[in-house]
Image 1 (cartoon, rainbow, N blue to C red):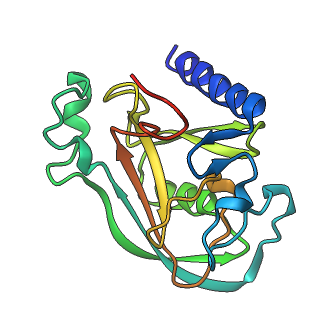
Image 2: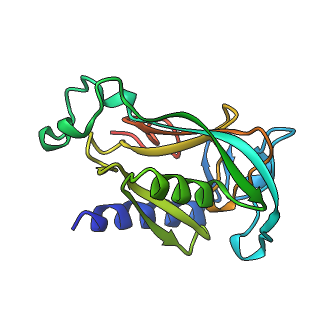
Length: 187
């Protein structure tokens, strides 16, 4: 049942994008128009070539600090929030040339016994992260869920399409304000 609201929300956003082509100030369906200089363009997962002979390192952090003392959090979920909000502190990890943020997240969660739930979303050709550490979208209200950033930038494309580079700093964070003010979503 938890997936139905997510699927409905994704469908509404997708239909909005398809019907108007513009999803808010600075956002369009052409993600390449809003990629800052020096940031990578998306790579389709089926086109990625992973070279396991070429290793790199980056850092990854998983945090739900926004949920520490958050009043609207589902009470059953409060016990899942670490006191400091850090699920995985900044950790240096190895990845292979051609891997995506999603490849890295899956491996790191598996290696650290952190629950991960995702769904492949064909319309965006990327994985959608539904829950990490048993904290899911909508657990803290209708604008809550997981976001990722790389080197302080929040890409406007899915984590399966973001190809990592040497030295990247990846942060997964739970937010209570996803979409608020973006994509034309409001109360």
